[in-house]
Length: 114
Image 1 (tube, one colour):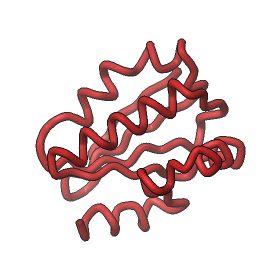
Image 2: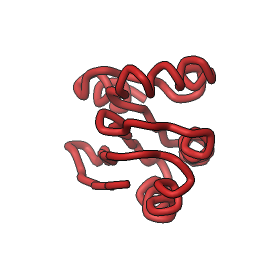
Image 3: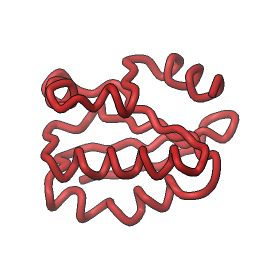
Image 4: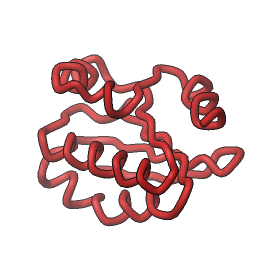
């Protein structure tokens, strides 16, 4: 699992994931992922455009992190998942917990408005 972090304007973090978010992939990134999502009033975009597999443990990582961010006054959104990953997210009801956007500009706008 590849994991890159960058900072966008206005302090928004962009976390770009690539590979499989299965037990091995989550194990490789979980600590760093949580670290970039820590702190108060964090705004994070998680780019899933290069994630080609999402298992239940990957879903757990996203949900627990998003809830943790929200309890500290921040917000996390998902960006541009592949059709296969989007289908899994929709079937499991994730959009009700974590907003999903197909364009970076839309994700940034929502994070800046909150």
